[in-house]
Length: 431
Image (cartoon, rainbow, N blue to C red; front, side, top):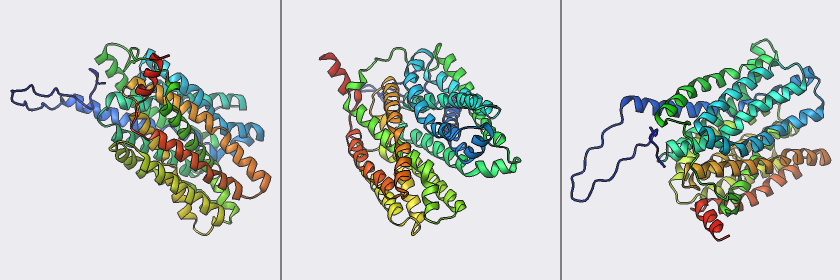
């Protein structure tokens, strides 16, 4: 698993029998600094993986009015992220084999920066959608390959590094949702400035990844962390891979419904517009510390079934409370739903643990996220249809609570201490 370029987890051979153990020499200072730079670059990349989406939501009415965007196209725009994450996510392993995962993530940061900045100058709907798709393509490949980078370069620290990645991703999600509107007002009220300013964070991440990319290429003498020699697994024959994909899809469904509809749910219950926005921020902020701690705890166990059950139980309680008494304890429901959405860092951790090699993680990550995001596309649309048909939130929220049951069942299957190589390769050899 280790490579000559590894800086984060140096491996020393055990002493031979009959010899005195030698004192392990510390890594050279420049290697330690590069390891820290790599960790900071991963956190910076993760921070940029959701503002593309969550900065747009609060300003969508302004964008739609200014660009003459029809309500149908605006509704399509809410489904574009999941579609892009799926389509471009499937392409990520092939790009990683040819160019190396570090190079592809670096290019992803460039695509995010360029797309976010350029769409703020878009004069029409079609160009705006195209540039948003460019940014989302960068998000998609980075979504898939950052866990691969962690598995390859931090093999003994998968839990802590996934925790850092998840925490930074949650922080970026919450910050963009919370400050985009006040920031836009401070900049004069122009939505173009309010959206475009997020390109600065993408540029910062890109500047951090460029020296990492150059260092990896120089040390490896080829593609930065290339995986050309990885064995192509018949991953569709792995039951664990399918379980992870469905688990990922169900948790993504809940997360996108919450991001899109939670303020409306609270407002319909009589909660003020300002407070409902804060409650949405609470569901996201609660994931910041939990996303750091949870992967560390999950990676220490042989399986993660306990966490699957606990998080699903939080969600069932939260959605039930929202359905039956939204205004009675809104802060409690927001916290419970936010805790349930921490299934995202849990499934990322399991992706890193369910494959033996970085190449296996690349295929599993692409498969689980690609299929999972495809599964999640109908969810927010269906919730909107149910709400439109009934005029109430009982049925939509009840559906979300019931959906957590199969999510838990598939999660229990995915959480067992298995490796996809053990399931896929024997099946392939016997075919």
